[in-house]
Length: 301
Image 1 (cartoon, rainbow, N blue to C red):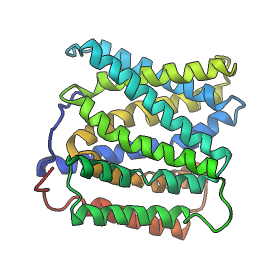
Image 2 (tube, rainbow, N blue to C red; image 1 turned 180 degrees about the horizontal axis):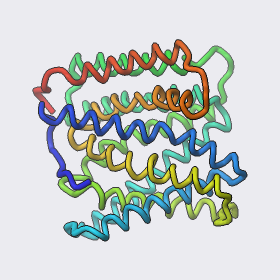
Image 3 (cartoon, helix red, strand yellow; image 1 turned 45 degrees about the vertical axis):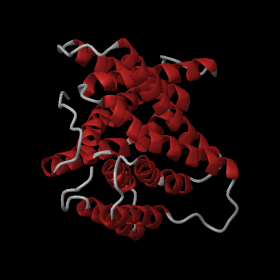
Image 4 (spheres, rainbow, N blue to C red; image 1 turned 30 degrees about the horizontal axis):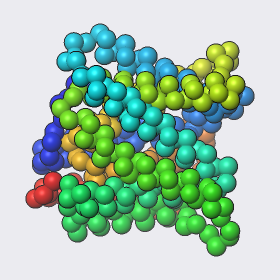
């Protein structure tokens, strides 16, 4: 958790950065399954999210407190809490809120346009060059998502859901480069802890505000929430930042599109769901994008 930041992508960092990003994707892929298991016990989504981030913040803060990390200046600490934490809470809330108006498949298709927004923003800023290889990887990942979840159909789609889902994608597209900039040379664990504190505060305010917050949870609810906090929040958040600092925003965003495929695989293993041909084909396309990004060192980071 204490790996230093790597300012530019070099050949020696591509493989470990990809591994960290894939580990993060595996953890994030379980979010929908574990969240569904928790809400199925009768508690609200706001309560699940509040406990998820409270436990994550406690775990990370406890870990950081047991180590001798260099103190982060108060101003930067507050940036991680507000921009990192509240930003994360906002995009999660917008994405989940869109499900009131559009199907989950449409949300997935719209939300996973975020690598394109990352690439566009980085290219406009001159921070990362969108060369032919990265453009091809982006196209493969986008095609893979389309094959897996299906292109939005010809039936009428509620524009409110579309706006919410695309807003979440745009915020995430800005969030990833922002976190890399904020991270600088700070250790990953403390910055992750501050971000989780911010997200916990946001969802606590939300759940208390709608009067749904409770600590009287059943054993199955606690089991799902603890798993959600540890395996789908703490560990993947740390792995994601470790990958981001090695690969840069564009590579990290493209590789992260493997999440829907991993969610489908987990659905097969945990819920006994069928693994469909479109899911397999989409997964192959996304894996192709990941493999493509392993070739040849970038001349311009």
